[in-house]
Image (cartoon, rainbow, N blue to C red; front, side, top):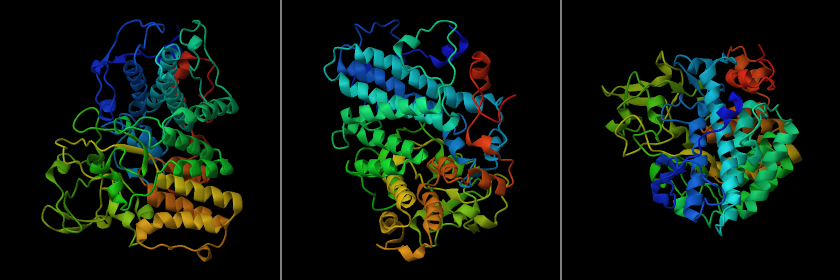
Length: 509
């Protein structure tokens, strides 16, 4: 088997856990045990075995997107650092991502994301082969879950790299040694994603039907939101509007207090705003160092601006290397409740009030984030806070943007923004039509509003690309940005293994 396909294939281990029903915590606390060669005619025999097999596919998401050390699985920071929303003073590869200095031969940055998402697609295809041949009575909903999950993984690959070869049919799992697939067309690739999602969504459980123990798995709301983001990327405005309405009909709504969304005690199915998240648990491999990367390292924070002490467990290790640039910070109004998730003023260990805007920091320049909250169970530098991928406020803003693009400046778009800003400012009607001169002025506003509402949640890169501001913003910051940077390079290892792969424009040798 040629090297390219070998790297796309991975061992399809079966989750041990006594083959118990997989809960949200078990999605992040798994022990993998290989059972050798399994036959699709004899496995899976029970619903529990089928659920366990599917759980191995979810493993691809954190392996590509986010890790305890954010640069180890860089999908998240690749969506943030090349934007106006985040900067860093960390050394390479952080600075390469921040300053558009990456090239095709920067192996680890892109191989990790590329191969883990691609292996996830392959593992989903293997699991589908087992599920389709299973005699489990409830297999249809699990087949739908696998198809939706596979579409999410394929869409994630498309976001970073454009259309790439995927293993989506059982006969491709053991291909001819000379099988070296070319890249599919954009139309072929996007048709696959849309078809997988649209055919699987009706068979998935609704938000109401999803059990608390199934938090973090694909349900109708999560799959619909993947479809919404797909339509938003492709500027299919009518489909964005229709899909947003279907998501709201699932029963999602806005949380009353902005920062409460991200508190660890509000995680799980009871969070009425979060649609899809990557579950985390503290102090081990399945954790994340939010505060370690964001909180000020020098001078070290001791108390928040309001005088509340920062717990010692949050300060075990702080590196202070990721920031929101002050230009982005200044887009928030003084009374915007969302601004409380960013630190400008704080007290240091000597009880001196620090204005971080005046500190000449060698690490990074800008406001520090405390948006993702604290974890009382944290004992090291790693927290157990879930990583939120999609939430309902994003859906409302997407619909507001789509209505403006389809119909021009309109009251319905204003009303959607005001629903979000009631939480941010405590007023029902913050904005009116007279606040905007045109469709174009509202378009610029909605891009800024997405920053204010969704900052550091991994959406900014794609938002800037969609609004045709990605290159211009990078140039304005003084970096050598060109159109090629809208996609990342296909990893050189994949190019070496498969001569039929064509590199993304601008990265050719």
